[in-house]
Image (cartoon, rainbow, N blue to C red; front, side, top):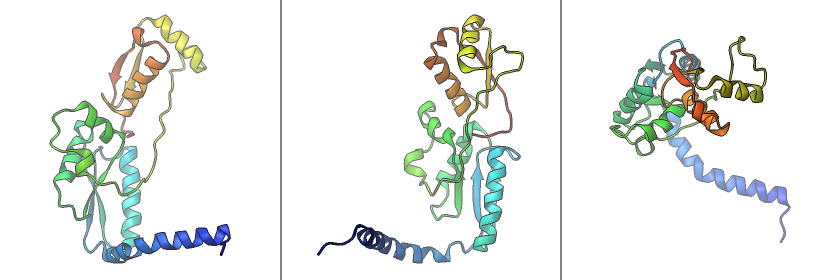
Length: 196
């Protein structure tokens, strides 16, 4: 007997879903008490705003309070450590960013193992990185900017939210890709309130 392709795909999807349904049925009583979402950034920044909107939506949808708990500092390591030490019961969640993955490579004395101690749940948002220049810089395109940067001979600078964070690593990667690392601009750490 030959099955039409569409019917085969429906049967395959049904068989796959059947293995998920029992687990989902057990989770229907979650949450039965307030849930804390630990955010490694300061209140008022982009990450915090999205986290608060999400928590409000989850609270309304699931009937229990979802509360943002800001624990800024140490490139999100303070927040991550707190969640890693919490009971693994789903009532203490961590808002992760690219900082969490890069921290594992630049800090060798962390008291937690991000891969082992934190389980992913889902993707909420994405923050793009955009290169901008001061209007006084004569460059209007990336090739013009690279040429201008080479002319500066190390007398240029760029801002980021901190060493090892996405803007810093992206800036270093840009310098490497464009062959301008020998005239590497000094990085200025600027706290902007925007997360990655």
